[in-house]
Image (cartoon, rainbow over all chains, first blue to last red):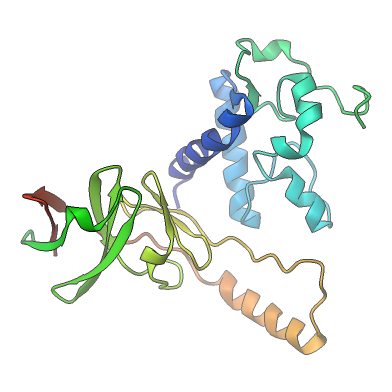
Length: 111
Length: 131
């Protein structure tokens, strides 16, 4: 299987999921490409495109909460940051993704 | 592959986003209507031979109903392999567990291959397929 084709397919499906939630792919094309590469690798290994920036555990239910796009499971946290944890998705109004810091839910007082 | 086109179905037989299995000159083929563009692919999944018309078509990406392997119907390229089953939290009985483990080991050996595609033409309300 070709990683580039799979990346295109993931982009197609992910767009349909995140757009109604007010998110879009990060305008940082290099980062987007890198993160999708990692997801294709994780999908090849586990059969599921997990978030490349969050640890897998032995708890399947918990792991299912980090299947990309994991926005619905962390909505309050991500909305506060205007980005998802790894930065693959940002709010639709974001033009400068570098200005959005990665802040834990604990630091934001959400958890 | 020869280039002789054979009338397969009428365009009205498959709504956009739909698929239909046909047999053309002995070949099992699925005709896909992707927003008004028709594509023809081999009927059998490149993973475990499931009939692909039972799956779902989203844009030009077909997802097999059996293990959710995905294919691009424009090229036949395999885009992803099977998705692992959700066994939930329930621990299977010992003998069943051993059986599932064995099946899992066998399944790991199965590669997902790309599938064949066939040229199509649309003329006078008919979709013709090259076989």
